[in-house]
Length: 237
Image (cartoon, rainbow, N blue to C red; front, side):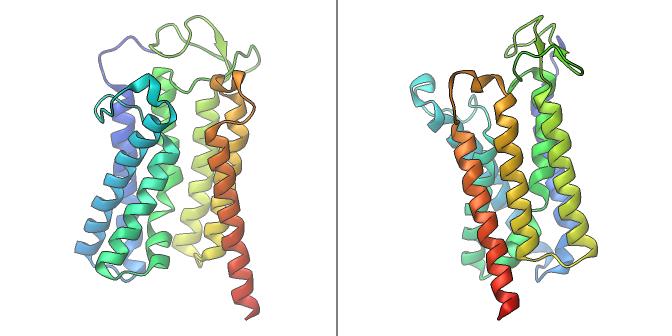
């Protein structure tokens, strides 16, 4: 969108990672974590986010990228989430921490990171929307990714708003109410459904019926429903 040498997308990703740290610092005292454990888990999580995001981007189009180059590959949001979860599980196993507490502490900031990352996408034009001439359309005068001079649906901004709302829901539940498997399950369902629906408004969807992102979105919805069912069963017991 802007002809500038400032790495806007990179700055957005850095802000997203910083926001994750801030949220975890605010919440960690509710759980059985001391400061060193919290810092260690954050290191594991951020490694998982970056490596997972890069790896899934690579696996989605191996023929295009050729060799795996972590410095030049883009970032897949789902890859980042999956990588974060795997590394948090590894941390929990290594240091004997509760999986439940790991998930409850570190998952609320995921939608916030995604929403901030989407601001970066909007600024540079990646993950752009379908052609659209209605209210709120955007036109890029300069972009390495989006077509220049074409009216597009502002899907990145819609994603930012949707996932920011999901974060607010999770944060309020975490900070002021009882955060449980039911809340986490509902959050997984909202994230999965949000991604599934909004993916239809991305330009990359023009030539396919169901994308890999949508398949993963449905998996997240299924996991969310399982967590809700698990909570309901616990209540009955």
